[in-house]
Length: 210
Image (tube, rainbow, N blue to C red; front, side, top):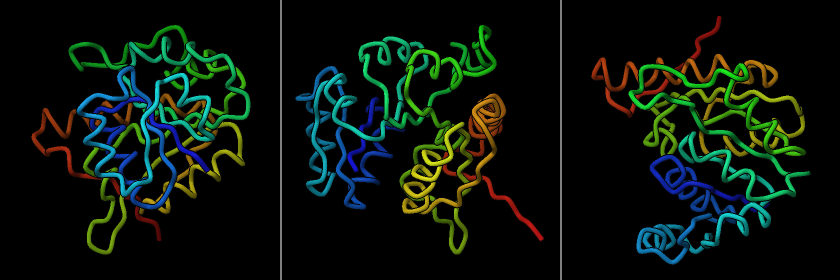
């Protein structure tokens, strides 16, 4: 399985390096795949990553993590026509510029809008309501951070669950893609606690059951 990472900010870098160090074949997609930042990422990837252009990364990957700012998502997705058979993991949050809320109004969630743009892809919402530090290390003593996911295709969700569990997460399937709106609101709660309440970005959520 080849995994593409579109977006090399904190989130994309953390996910890509974690997976590369788990011996997944990773392609980092960038407008400038020979940049110093990209070369530094490749040096940390245990020899399991390469850097290509965005179009080439999407075309050459089985599973693609979309970790770009929301305002760039449509352009990136529409740069490739052949989404059929791809699993597209939507890590985005459609944040307003001042981080006071979500900006999506045309459809219930960013994930559902992405599914309209990436026709033929199996869109799975995940990795949007946790911090990059948790993506690098989801283990808290004997506990594992919860990762919430949703999507319409059961087999694709199973594939994403397997990847996330190998990364160390306790994965919780919240239902079909229509529940992405709740996960995007959960991201707003995370942002509020991390930055406005001063909790910092290295905390995670946990579900307890009897």
